[in-house]
Image (tube, rainbow, N blue to C red; front, side):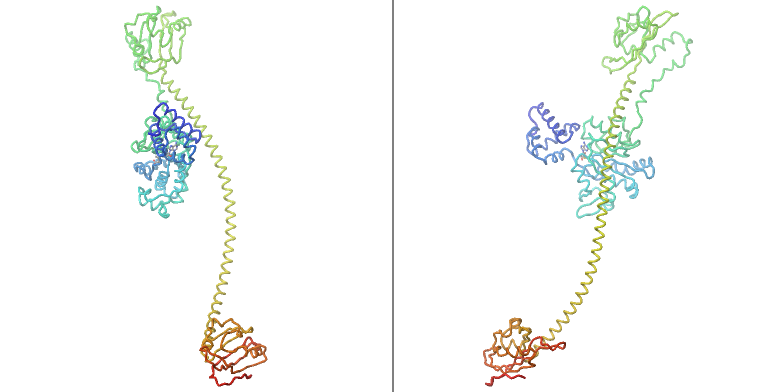
Length: 630
Ligand SMILES: C[S@@+](CC[C@H](N)C(=O)[O-])C[C@H]1O[C@@H](n2cnc3c(N)ncnc32)[C@H](O)[C@@H]1O
């Protein structure tokens, strides 16, 4: 085994050092856990990481920051489930809650403490059961479930309230439907009910309990604690519960050793209720007096009756005569001090009872001298093989005609009274502790309250800021919406124009294409705007090549330079038309005569030429070459 050294004494020492380290460095007190289980789980962790011995493990903890969380994970068993053990839940709903509600005003808050809640399943089970019993509205208004655990990682998971299909497998389908919302592949406990469950870290061994609770569910947690720790935690639960409050334990847990604090409501389901009032009072009740003492009138009894009454007395008593000899001894004294009838008549000093439990001879002397009873309180005595007992010893002189004739020695057993007194002192000490815990809880609450107050104020400010930002956004949104509508209209108009333009272009295109002549439309810079299909056919230059090019730089079979002058004259508005027969070479390389006509491009709106229109037609070559204004 890697964890345990060979020498058990050494092992104990090293383990103590580890526990001490965890207590000092992390505030984790493992002293109250059952030793065997604790060792088992520590060994498991040490084995998993291959560390040999507790000393090495302390070093490992110091050098691996994430190890503490892993250790906690191994030590604090988080096993849990919804409606775990299903035995108590129906009982809680049908029997326990009606009893609890009957003790309350109709609107009074119901406080529940789920102690050792692990990843939250038990707390949400309680929420469902309570919501079923009360109805959802009353549940939301009246119930607070405080769910606590030592394990922060488990609590973080519990706070998410999100569970897988497997996790909710034991939840009745109708409850899954009603109390969970589907989010992806998770079932999330309903947010409005989730608010009633408050998760927090609480170490049952060290921290003050949640106070004034009506129901505590602490299931499968106490069983990890050793007996004295269980007793301490149960005393805290007793303090935390209101009178008439209930405690639910786990299936394997019992409360027998602490029966004075809790009484079973249903032992099989492990449901208990707080016991109020001290049973010690019962134990203090004086024993009943024997009938003889009540029935007989003094002076009317015979010697035999008197002797019988003495013998049956409930207080151990014997009488010593004037000569110092044992004269009478009753049955209780005989039993207690092992005296026999044979001892009657013997000198007291020869008997053990003369000096044990108390040195009697001097006090008998004192009683004779003072002629008064002498009392010695709380004399302890343990009979061989018996329990420790306490007696008040009353040594009373007996008179005959005013003369001391003997001494009665009576042993009043005050053991129960002393025990009750001791219990009373213990309870007072417990009360004192509880009071101090209450005080510290109060202070904590006060601090939490103040923090909450400041958080609420901060939230209110943030809320106002958010609201004003929201309003601004709202305004911007509306503005954008109206701009959007305007753009939409403009867009529609543009689309209309664009359609019209396309139609016009198509129309023009078809006009230019239908013409038998080559057509070139030039702008005022003599750049080609339009170059129709016939121009392409005539000169072998495609529209894409010609368009945007300067007309006079076009490399075509037409001597375009000869059109320079008429083109400029048309642009200047000095020429209305110009015709010429120019020798040219068509795209096939054949010499042709090209009949060219040049017109200024004018619009209806203005007479100023916007450009020039050049029309080119192939004519058979006839040897003539000339240019003439139209
Ligand atoms: C086995 S789970 C029980 C969960 C749940 N109550 C149930 O029955 O399903 C035990 C829980 O007790 C917690 N625990 C162990 N020691 C604790 C302590 N000192 N104070 C508070 N919780 C403790 C563990 O973290 C663990 O979540």
